[in-house]
Length: 196
Picture 1 (cartoon, one colour):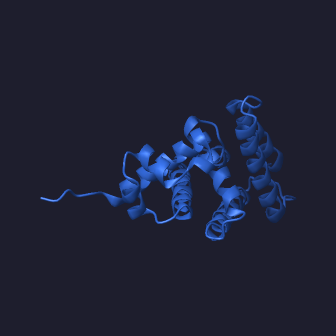
Picture 2 (cartoon, rainbow, N blue to C red):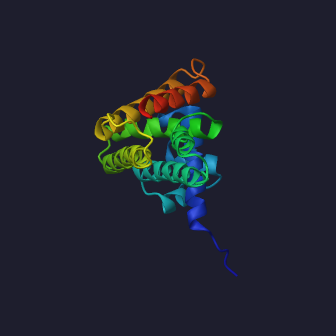
């Protein structure tokens, strides 16, 4: 009887092997051969799932987005709204080993998308999704009467996104400078500054 292979599980395993190679050796070493070795498969088997490095990086980035979305959706709706918004934002930041790995993959992907036309549409899509998520969080606070009346949703969306991006960069580039608790405190401080 032929062996049944879970192709989606295999693709995720390959994506995780890609993350490992990128984190350990850098993007230049994220070759089909090195990734296949890390995933415990042949280069030919890997090519069955991904025909190019760009396709593999795109899938890896989609997997990061999927995991963030799953964590955000797991936040209990019963917690106070401001706490819920804060926890959503914290899921985008490199505060754990897992989220640090995701953020490093995101940075590599973003850099590669600057010159790889195959990755640019996905990069723009993810940017738009994050921007939309920031806006929805702010609209939620407004609709619940928690946001100050003088806060511009449009401007605050960009400012909040810039704050989260900046904290993420600091967390990756200068990991010893801000502790996870300090990053959380900054997010809390910012949210308090725009709320009633």
